[in-house]
Image (tube, rainbow, N blue to C red):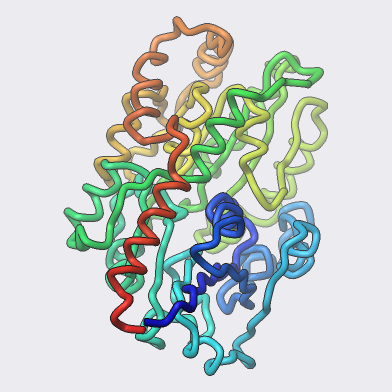
Length: 398
């Protein structure tokens, strides 16, 4: 029997999703059971930091996010990597290895052919989902080929596992390991020392599904003026706007706002002393820096639970239905219709005291975090153990 160690390739094409892989990558680098490599892949669907190539056409520079290249980002992170593009993929190298490929997303169209699920049956794929399966949208999640073919899908919690199994995925492949990224977020939130001139910080995260034909969670076109009013009424509070990276394109494409509407909003938002726009690659820092989240979804409904802070969900009436994960999370959030009066929002935000444990949803919120495995610190170890099991089970292919 060969003693050659299995090589685990971390395939990275979105800098913004690296935090989902990073804890396991760092752990495996220090472990002698596997050889670990990081591969940067030129994304075929989106720009260097995970933005659709067409999303910036005609959009103001301040809406474009961080334009750092994937390779510049990796160099600044101090990461050692190989790089592959659509034009140059070393198939001989890939197929000669006893490999797992740990994918960032299930979108095959983002990858050169050699890395696509259907292209190389000799490769064993492992997926740690970046999405949290809040909305029931099987056509873009559980029905994707990677989900069906992956050797391992390592999910956040038993609730997530149940959702995947109900959708027809195999119990042999789907494992509730916990989320390394969200568990680290929980640990960091416990250690954080706030340092701000503002009494409180509110994070506003609008989703990009602003149309009527897909998910239908987005409310920015309804809420933007109200959020401006709210910021003006609460000058002692910092308001951080963190948009989904496709929001501006979708507002234009769905004719929800014109480019001039966006410019008008930005001029007003940027004119206030207590507002800012977060365009960093990662958004965990914004979770940690805030005291309250206002969002219309989707994965942030689960992710923010890891911080233990209050969450206000702007719940669009005609949105797609929720999964068992999404419905479970709703028990620990404050819900408002997007047509809510500004005074109502201000009243709630003024009442919430994140230093206290006696507000209405605190007990439910802590239980939800526990149910979702967000408060446990063994996710990386669980992923590692599952990788060892998969390696042993598949050793006869070597």
